[in-house]
Image (cartoon, rainbow, N blue to C red; front, top):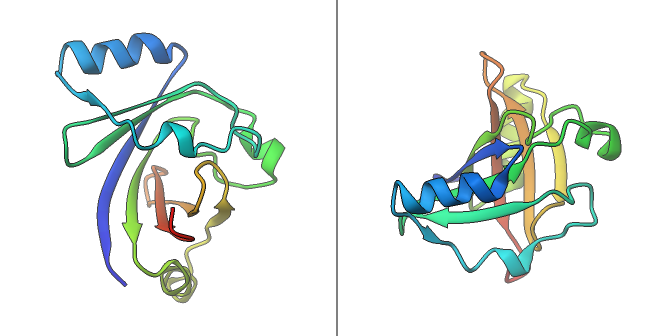
Length: 137
């Protein structure tokens, strides 16, 4: 089971302004591969933008305090944002968290087609995502 930093999710009430800031001030580029893969009807209909430095992505998301209520999940990944890692074996990672006694919210294929996503808290309450791309996505 390998982990690699994939993206940082930053939340905002004004995604367009945040997107302009990261593109104009930090000279980041649009990440064009993700917009078509969104699943907006599974609990997260918010506005998003994706930017990248060519290696790591920033996912800019509209803040949504109601996701936990709509999905029945304990962890809300777009309240204050999160750090995301990609794995090659999500089931092994879930077993690893369970063995360590760390609870997690299993969102499954929720926001992106083919991405199996789980979210959990670090000891300071920061949200961490681990996901695996499945089904040739």
